[in-house]
Length: 93
Image (tube, rainbow, N blue to C red; front, side, top):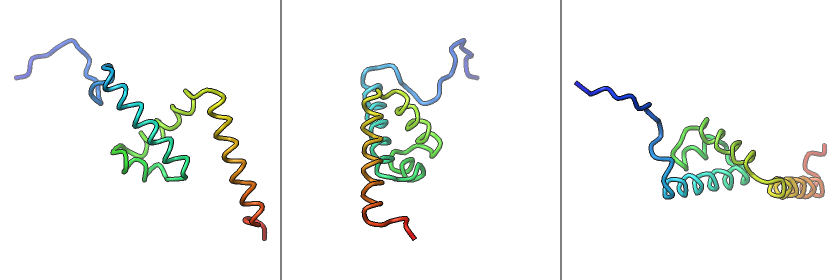
């Protein structure tokens, strides 16, 4: 029989060592990069090896953690895409 311990069980493995933190940061960057290329969270999850829900949570967490300058850069990119689409006449009928 397994011996009971008072330590809480944690899901997901090691998150505290410098190597683990670096891997988490790399995965987060990969998720953000894929999402900015308009990949679905389902596709991102498949690529990274996590669920769709975890891909979405990680993306949202990354957005909240980023500085205002990073978010402004993201918005400028979105606005540039919209301007290009408008110039091409996309969405006009």
